[in-house]
Amino acid sequence: MKLTRGFVAIAFILTVWGITVAQQNAYPNELKAYEFFGSGRLSGLRLITSGKTEVKAIFGNNCEKSCDYDPNWKIHFEYFEDIWTTESHNVSGGKTVYSLDPKYLGKLRLVRLTPKGEIFLDAGDLPPAFTRTILTSTSDRASGKSRMTVSDAFSDEFGLTYEIYNRTNYDEIKDTPKRARGELVAVKYELTPAAQKALFILRK
Image (cartoon, rainbow, N blue to C red; front, side, top):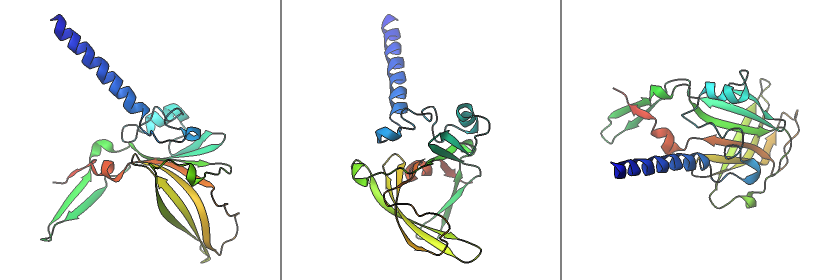
């Protein structure tokens, strides 16, 4: 009996230790100046686990989708609000439909922070864990004028992305100042494609 209790105690300790480590390492590649999940106000939140109640408990009742993170940052939250569906097709033309497991409705799927002022980030300072993707964004107005901007998104395997402004290809709007090259546009935390795929179940 004593031996069994000893094993139970060890298993419990290892379980608690494992949970703690997992929480601390949710985004192990966060840069030291931007550890919003590692040691910031987001440390108590988890994608697909936390919802609006947990967000409001940290940021206040008026903060459900967007508010100030602190004097220097704005924060934006996105949730699974609807039952998403996805399809796959086989070579015979058959179709399989998957839908989001309803238990994830209302849960966080993305957190995005945007700086209020100018912050510059050198892509060379990012560790090799990040890979670069080119993003393009086009703004259109009712007048027919538009603007296309190009940014570099550096993402790691855990769903952490640093978006850095690169250039403006063309600008017919010209009503707001352009960003400077190397300016940090946003820090984003989202589910990886594999993690999001695991949330879907076969639709009957």
